[in-house]
Each structure stands twice: as structure tokens, then as C-alpha cells.
Image (cartoon, rainbow, N blue to C red; front, side, top):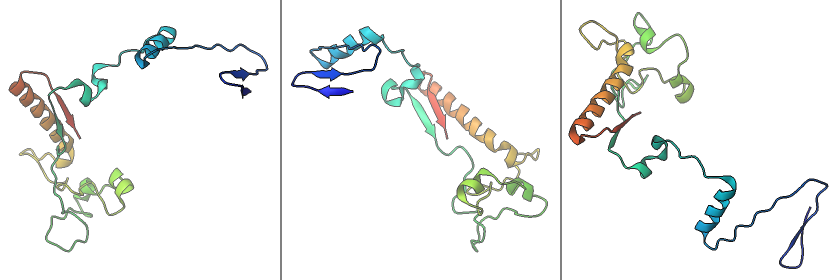
Length: 163
């Protein structure tokens, strides 16, 4: 129980135990922090990368579009002349697998793996590799190319943050 008495005092009533009080007189806020740290110790220094962009000031780039994107296409039932990926038949397992994907869970049942991108049953090279297989490698390749380009242009190591 804590009782406020005539100024300036408090009365603490406890069933048992020991209370330990610390008074940090300052006189400035900086002095209060220094005095507090003398009691509890100084905090650890966080990792350099953990300080955030606003505090470390390095060259970097944010890659937002690191995959083939086709906005306004591949929507089921749009009635237009847009690209339509197969939802049934021989190649449908690449764009419309027999299991529910994150697109369906997050965005509703009319969204598929191909929503807002090119058909994953297509090929991306002469050897016939499916875009389904190469799609993630496209982002990695773009990230590596951007990293090397910044390093060559600035002469410094940089940060490349892909989406």
C-alpha cells in the first residue's frame, strides 16, 4: 500500500520484504541517465545493420519489382483480351496447383499463382525451363546485378533490399 502524506513524502506499507530506492538527482536529464546506468550498467551495442537506414547512411537500393509483372492481366472472367493462363488441362498444374496457395488465402479464391504476373507454365529459356522454376531466380539475379552495379559505381559495398 502506498499512502501520499503531507508534501513531500510517501508512506509505503508492506507485508514483508525489503524495498530499495534509488534517487538520481541530475541535475540534467543526461546526468540522470548516466547515474541510472551506473546502477544498472550500460546497454549492449546493437549490431551495425540493426541501427536502421536513418542512422547509418550507406549507399543502397530497394528493388520493388524483382519478378515479371503484368498488371491488369490474367484476371479470371475479365472478358477482355488480356493474357489468360490455363486453369484446367495439361499445363494448369503450374498456374493452378491442386492445393490452396497463399494468394488464395490472402486475396480470395479468384487469385492464383499467376495473378499479376506472366503464366508460370511458360518457358524462360531455350532449354524449356518453366517460369515457375525460374521465377525466384529472376529476383536473385536482379539483386546480384544491382549489388555489383552499385559497388562498381561507388567503389563501396552497398545494401540491396529485394521485396
